[in-house]
Image (cartoon, rainbow, N blue to C red; front, side, top):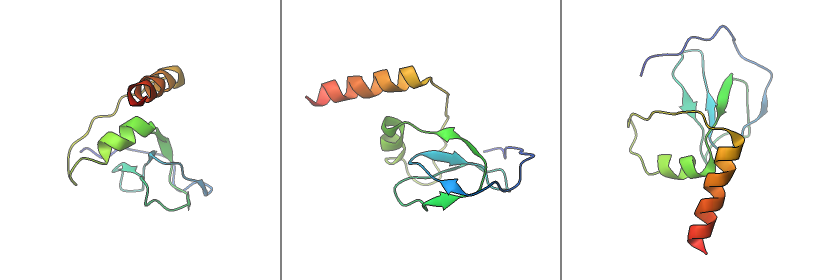
Length: 87
């Protein structure tokens, strides 16, 4: 998709959670999954929920995705609902 503009260069390296959305210098967002590095220094927009990571993992490379923000409360409610389905 369209590159994102960031005035930030590299940042101090810090731990990278599953689903982190990083913006490297070329502006193309990267979503880091299970095979991610342990630390990184690109600016981050946020992270996908575990449920969103599971869905994204099923997509083929090059698939266009659209992300939308949710609150921590919404993410927790979705996670609890999924756990109930598995019981």
